[in-house]
Image 1 (tube, rainbow, N blue to C red):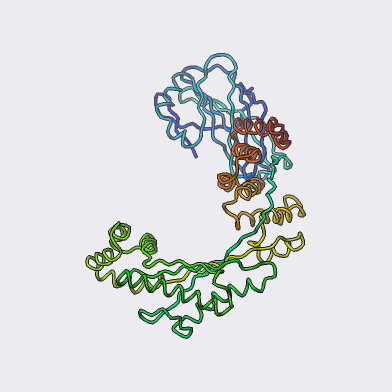
Image 2: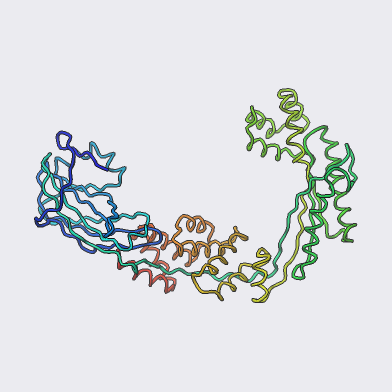
Amino acid sequence: MRYIFLCGCFFLFSFLAHGQKDSTVTVNEAQLYRMGKQLVVSMQINVSRKLASNESLVLIPQLRDSLKNFMEFPRVYINGRRQHFVYLRNSKQFVQAGHLEVRRQDDSVQTIAYLRSVPFEEWMNHSVLSLEENSCHCGEPEDGFSQDVARLNTLSELHPQLAFMTPQVEDVKNRNEKIYAYLDFPLNKTDILEDFRNNAAELYKIKEGIDVLKRDSFVSISGIHIHGFASPEGPYMNNKRLAEGRTTALKDYISDQYDFPDSLFTTNYTPEDWEGVGRLLRDSVLKNSNEWLRIVESDLAPDQKEQRLRKRYSRQFNVVVSKWFPALRRSECTIKYVVRPFTLEEARIVFHSQPKNLSIEEMFRIAQTLPEGSQQYMNVFKTAVLYHPENPVANLNAACIALMQGDVVSAEKYLLRAPDSKEKTLATGVVYMLKGRYGEAKSKFKEAESFGLPQASYNLKLLNTIY
């Protein structure tokens, strides 16, 4: 892409073949290295050339290999006084492209810190970084000059160290399994009929969920909670009677099937599920859905809500009753159970069959037996946070795995739920490091080092090689 530069009038900056003149630009501490999924260019550019007021010097970092793969990095524009003010008036396109502009101050050596990154591509493993220098006196370009400044070492990918957090032992592993059953009842009745409509299949879901747990020698059922929901159609008091009666009927049915004591059960019921209506409305394209929502979420009594909707939107209401309300009439059956602790060998087996029954500490012990950094090793930590998404330690360790893979975006999300700790401080420093925010990374590493983390000391030494 070519860019228009201004010097009193518009002219096109053309870059010529490499000339033979001596450069007035030197480069110190040039670095070309991989960091995660990014290729980073870092260098100190020293400019000694005196520029006239209307003169510009353009530096173009370029990456190329022997197979003619090529990439141009954002440029550095060094301007004399007049050219600097012209640039300020027309800088939008340069800023959007990520270019850097500097005003030449005086005759002394001026140092410019350059740091940019791009997504890494395989051909870059054998690439050379060069810096092309071009100057212009208000429309009269001079011969260009290019110098090679860095080469990518295929072994130069940076691997900052991280610290995982050891989870605490979960004293009692309480788990639950939730089953949604959509039972049908004859009009205004509360008796469960197994052969009525689709009831056999719905009841089978509940029984299968219980049977799986009863067959598992590692678990014991500790409670069953049933919450019955009715749809907001008809008088509220009748719906209350139906919701309560049908919930009790399901509890009695399960108790009879398994000879469970009443003490195992708890129940609740919602006579009219207006919250469910609201959820369906927000996910729908129903005409007038906002007006519906205002009524549904209002402080009106349930029967008044129904009457107002029937009166204002009678045709729509009939459709909603036939299409939406059946999904609101349901029983949520939550089976609570306790899982006994596992030995390491048992935990390995359960990890592949019922990972939710493992504690984070048990998964951590599995990971310690695997090669660090292996796919299996990382998969254990990913599984831990998948089944325990709110657990702070699981999130901290998942952030470490994401950073090992160069996935800064996922790491930052996990760190939001991680506990305040020296391990989080260290991981946050690695995030800054991978994003090229080296000053902030250094600060975090020093803080983590003060807590006694040797990984922080290592990362500081690593950081000192590039910053």
